[in-house]
Length: 112
Length: 113
View 1 (cartoon, helix red, strand yellow):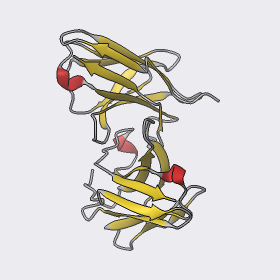
View 2 (cartoon, helix red, strand yellow):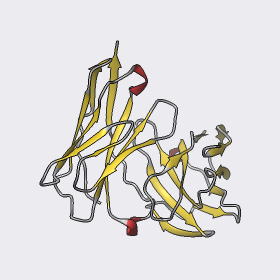
View 3 (cartoon, chains in turn blue, yellow):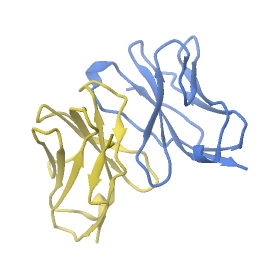
View 4 (spheres, chains in turn purple, orange):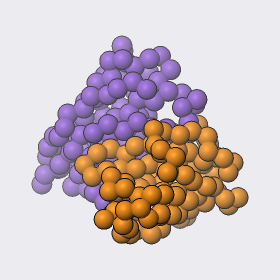
């Protein structure tokens, strides 16, 4: 699986959009971009995933660049409960099974 | 609808002992994976079970073994515990063996003294 690079930490203001970048310059054509987050003392939580097109769900939006070498997770209106470590993961298709390779993630602190 | 449940939530062992951790997957899920998360690091994949067989394995020694039961629940066993085995052990379940939308439990925190 391709390696990802994320900022170690970032702060954002409550009620504002939080934009979390991820670099995956070695991504290959059959690899998806996944985002998970882990709130303190809890297990990781799936947020969203995508292959080429931008994706949106009730939690967030995922913007993938045309060359697929980077992506941005957008939390449209951050709340204090969004304080967590956010993991960007690149993973192959179905052949990879449940194996996700987590890096260090971005520690996001939402401030009032 | 119960999510993924793990037991025990916390436990303390000494070096050389053996430990068994248990996991019940989310209702309707048939695939279970186990991850180890050391303090301050991201989770690391240990192995995956589907149809009562180990399907994939990460870079962990044979001291780590598992089992899946007909009701899809699973156990993780670690023998000859080392201090470095101290970690949060996470169980995740999914609908299909190749699904990467995983549902995680809250983990079992193991401390080895």
